[in-house]
Image (cartoon, rainbow, N blue to C red; front, side):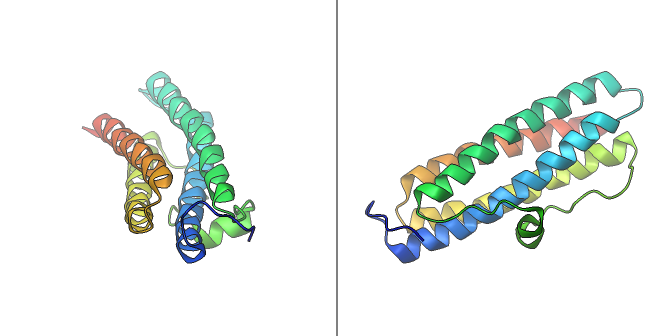
Length: 156
């Protein structure tokens, strides 16, 4: 851990960084899964889903960098390996070849899983008076809730 003096205690920065590390792991796992589905989706809604999946993984790619940089700004190292992500992520890795409906259902559930992780971190950040992380996490909450809704709409 690097020495940091931003008005947030070392203990609080550690707790927030640990929470953000889980968000990073969930986000990275979801990124890989969404890109996989983008490449492999088939079916009557191919074009719509192919484009939707691309929009979502592009957003995740940008968010991953922002989350990792926030962890570093708190004075901690960001996890950066599949092994570390596997230990931290609540989002499961995809190992099969689901059909388009299973893809959409799984991604909607995964978006909601990320929402759950984010809600835990926003509480931790609020308790630490870490307004920067609160803002970052709140913005991501909005994105993931909307993404889950968009995905669920395809199953209706």
